[in-house]
Image 1 (tube, rainbow, N blue to C red):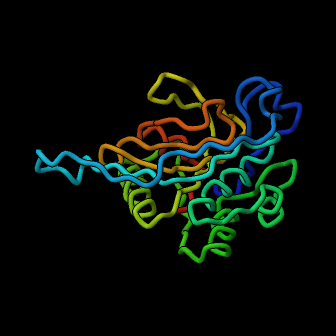
Image 2 (cartoon, rainbow, N blue to C red):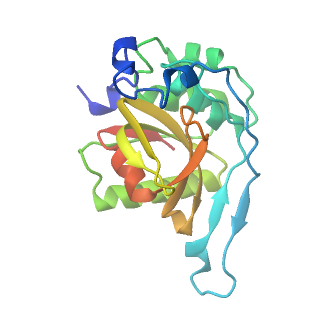
Length: 221
């Protein structure tokens, strides 16, 4: 089976053992969706350095919502991305378009299809097929994220496994998960993640860690 077609989700039994589309205590996963209004799009850089472009920062304004159950990571992450385009759909509406079930959302291809149907924004699906991202694939992810965010398009990534953010907090999704890349800084070496299952909502992670998190799966940019 093509790795990009792997489902992202967990059975209830698996959910009790390891992270899938949620993280942290099970009770937190079923809390009502919350809304956070991050700062709007900004671009900053050092005017005193010749490499100003390499230090650029971009962060899109999105409406964050937590996923309301263990299998809605795909709809929640897609809805976060759509909010940057002013699309105020419910997670249930997005889930119906994605074909999400309790087994999860089939593929990053479905995410791309729905994003394009609703925004006409030219999203494409890119796969990182190996177990570890190659240097060229890391560079491609950086370029894709920068180009997408500069065009006002958050990136939705299908990830699997455990990765640690810049604050030292681990995020574990052994059954697979979807999340949204909404910003970058240091020229794209650090990425801002809106994670519908994370208690803190958003966090920073290095580009290489995100690329390896996506390995064997794909992203929509």
